[in-house]
Image (cartoon, rainbow, N blue to C red; front, side):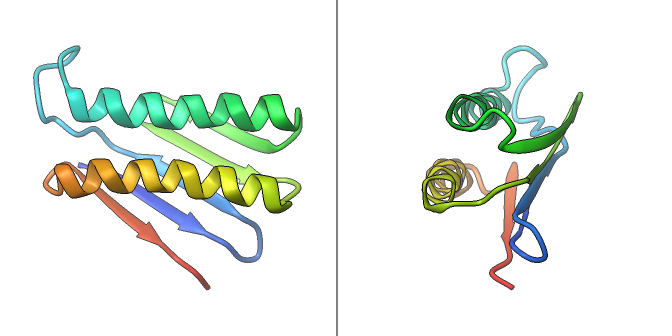
Length: 102
């Protein structure tokens, strides 16, 4: 299962870990959807503000901490989470989102 954890304090950050295993490796549509959403978002964050995040990326794991948060980055983060929530609604056995407002 893919797990998405979002924290907002003391800094805005997210961790995405695991694999969906909803299909054969290379044909896993849930994993492909999550990867496309996350890496597209990371590219947008980087394009918008070159030092927007500090990222750790490895197989089955992405951890991003936002260095500077403004309204545009909050909107971009909301867009990423909305897309991930759509995947979660369609495939709840393969992805879980923990979105902390604290």
